[in-house]
Image 1: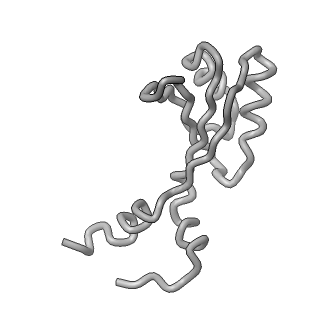
Image 2 (image 1 turned 90 degrees about the vertical axis):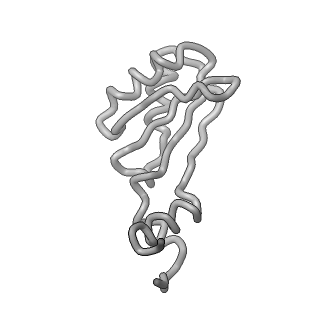
Length: 103
């Protein structure tokens, strides 16, 4: 089993696993519901495993800038504290390309 190609190309195969995170000052559940109104947002959930809960969401076009999501939340009165993007890791790539092939 061998991958011959640029790492960016390999990551492209997992583009749908790219996640965006938003920290809001208050009401993260309401912020998640607001994000679901955007057509490009596939899902939005609250990740409360951290001190400051954050909203995790996937988009239909992961390479897109999450600025529409931020703009929507600001327009609706949310204070956005932080925006982050999490791309698939090398571990995710390994599992994707070796799934069912390595025992």
